Structure formats: C-alpha cells, structure tokens
Image 1 (tube, helix red, strand yellow):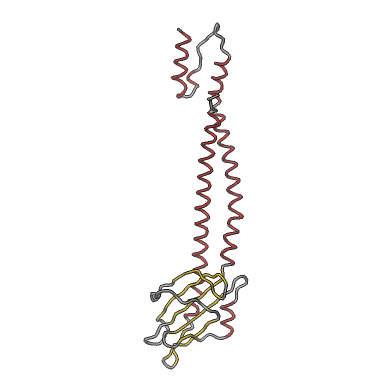
Image 2 (image 1 turned 180 degrees about the vertical axis):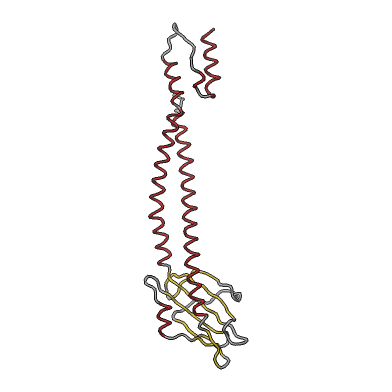
Length: 231
C-alpha cells in the first residue's frame, strides 16, 4: 500500500515543528537566564571591589589600605560561597590579599572592570579586576581583584532548569493535544466525503451535495466528480 494518512503526515510535521520551536525557545530562555544571573552577580562582585577601593588612602605620600579586621570579616562573609580579595599598589606592592590570584593577562584599562573565570585557591571562581588612580598616591595606581566561588551562580542555573523544563514539557503536551484536536476537527469534512464516496454503488450514483460547506481545496475535485456522475 503506497498511500499515506493525511492526518498522520500533518501531525508529524506540526508536532516536529512545534518540538523544534520549543527546544529553541528553551535554549534561548536558559541562555538569557544565565546571562541575567551572570550580570547580577557580576554587579555584586564589582560593588565588593569598589568597597575595597574606598578603603585606599594616602599616608605619608604612599598608598595604603585601611581595612580593619572587622571589615575584612564582613568582606569575606558569605553563607554559601567563598570570597577572596587582593589589593596591590604599583609602587607599594601588595596591600592586602587573602588568596593566591593568578597573574593578570594583558594590561587593565584604568577604571574599566574586567570579569573572567579562573581558579583561586584551587576553587573555580568568578573574578573582577580593575585598576584605579582615584584614592591612590600621586603617580601611583592600585589594582583590585575580588573573586567569588560559583556555588550560588551554578545553583541558580540548576534551580531555573528544575522550574523551566517541567513547565516546557507541560506546554509541549498541551500544545500537541490542541494541534491534534485542530487537525482532527479540520479533517472531519474530508472523512465525511470519503465515507460518502465509499458507500456509493455503481447503479445508484448521486451528485455530492452541500459543497458550500466543504473546504475550498476540495471543491475542484468534487465538482469534477459530480460532472462525471452527471454524465
């Protein structure tokens, strides 16, 4: 049998297209969620770096970091992640560090933060680095790096997956059912015509009535059939 089911072909093509669209929309939504999460956490990381920058002072013509132990504890405190910091002066050397940061590649543009991923103290972390002249001694610059491990970032993405994927699965199932209903109801007129033609007997052929209620795509075929019957 070389025939095929019109309903099956329509459903396969529509469901396939719908599945592809939902997959692409899911990937795009997850990428957008990851981007938004990264931007938000990067802003917090930058705020922490600027907090350290505000503690850079000039004493006896040298750049120093006035950071009491209580302030260090507040800077390092995080219920989930580890926070690391490093402040160095171009002329005075290391002013503060609670971790071993990798050497920066290239040259930092003054006042423009650079975000990158690396390992700090053996842990995968997100780092912001910036070079500032404000607050430092004349003819001096300070470089500040603040790093945070990625536990919150990665758990945020996992939480989004756990919420979004089941929701997309429900949307896919409901939409597939709606497509099935639309295709089935749309082909009902074709099935009625097929049933009517299958019950015809050669001795009792009658023209097909009510053509105005049929889809326009079927009218040329049925008009030709009625002409054959009339002849």
